[in-house]
Image 1 (cartoon, rainbow, N blue to C red):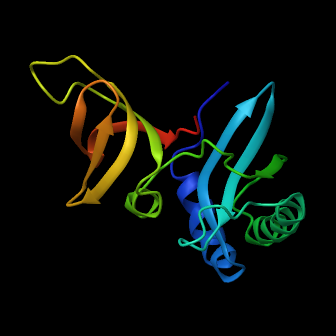
Image 2: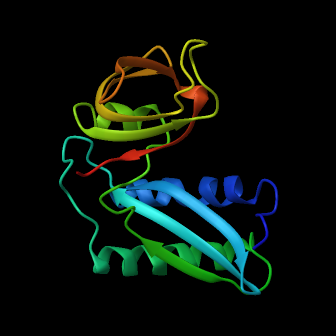
Amino acid sequence: MSSEPIGLVEQINSLIEPELSKKGFELVETVYRRESGTWILRLFIDKQDPLDKKSHVSLDDCEKISELVGMLLDTSEILIGSYTLEVSSPGINRPLKNEAHYLRFLGENVKVSIFSPISSSSNQRNFSGTLLNCKDKTIEIDDRTSGRVTIPLEQIAKANLDVI
């Protein structure tokens, strides 16, 4: 497995995000990497309505977006050579990538891993609990083991919904 060419994901996102938005979808995550000798472009999409947390992406949605993105990429020539395009839902444990995601899922259970401990008195780097707040580039979680914790967004290595 090799890593993506530098800056390519940003170019892809810049091309397709406005078109997805027009269709009522949000681009949650883009992964472009080599797997078993083949380049894979994996897009995770969700419905755009921030008030509807229970709206799910259908197989038909993925098919429509795949056709749209395929056409956009083919005409833009951002990707040279062959690749496999995969479009899917982020799933029930969807990743949280930006402030808008955290705001959308306030009150939900989340799992958060951070790069390094935020306190010198604790080595804790993994948190699981209710997402209470998101403001001033931080999130607040009611962690199941350590209570209320405030975490700067730049310290978050990975975060996702935790459907328990």
